[in-house]
Length: 58
Figure 1 (cartoon, rainbow, N blue to C red):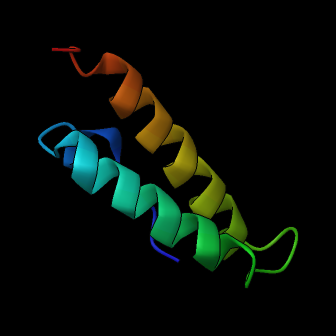
Figure 2: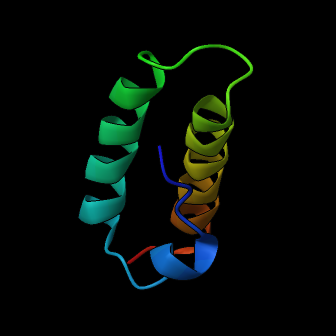
């Protein structure tokens, strides 16, 4: 799995971030512990969470 950086996520809408979080979460369960793919998935989920928190609430 490819790491998605915070920079790539900053312009995404809340809806896009939610969909991406769900997609990456589903991909995470198909990874093996200790692999680069799993580390990338976990880091991506963390980046998505940070992007969601940083979004201004309307």
